[in-house]
Length: 343
Image 1: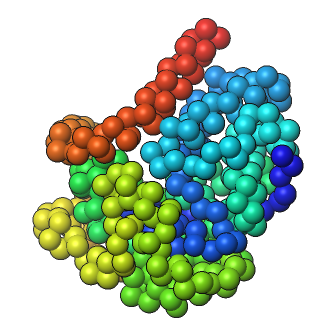
Image 2 (image 1 turned 90 degrees about the horizontal axis):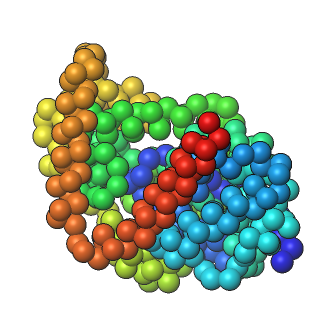
């Protein structure tokens, strides 16, 4: 299958900020294909050394095959039959991980006859150089939410940190990366979307986003919760269950009951600059430097909190994520073995 060039959208930011909501909204357009992400770049960049020189077609083909394995294990399934290893190899222009990543998304879009594809893997903000080098030329959507609400939301999910110190550090680091990208690429390449505005003024925000992307707005975007994409995601885990519901307009300021006063103070102390830069009300608090011993204690508490969440998780959620996590572990173990042999 020969792949036509499609427009590439890359969402950036921090999870639990409405990115899945916006993904399924945009996916209602006939112009857009926006699948649930298997986090290809995040998984494979740390393993890349084990694949050797990717100008060697055998090495590149092995990487392409492993990428497809990861996609097949995604908790929210992709469409079947849109590509295979040979088709990826035949169409890839840039012999790199980012090149394979780009052709995979382009072929999925072509399969649906969409001219725009959207990747929701927010961590890709840290790989924008590689995407640019591969010629993807993405349009970036920086979706953001009050970081204190993000922290409260992470508390009961199977992914991400749980301790307020680690949550604040993660959110601040990711928002800094997004804001730097805005400075680098400007408004022609990056649009900011505030989660709270998407909840309060959905039609206005979607029209603004669609106009910037050059796609047609459709009222179906507001009925996302009835769509196949939303129902498929919501049935694939509790962390996406709200996708089968209309907009939760009250889902703002939840941190006031989800975090205690000490946790709020720690978050505002560590991430106050980023909160204020994004327009959120936040008092200026005196910075405190934590010792390495204290940070290690925070990390131990975080592991205990994560185990507690796992112990309370629904069996269905664990089973649905297990295949993906086992695949990532197998890929990591294979990479480690190959690296050891080469040393």
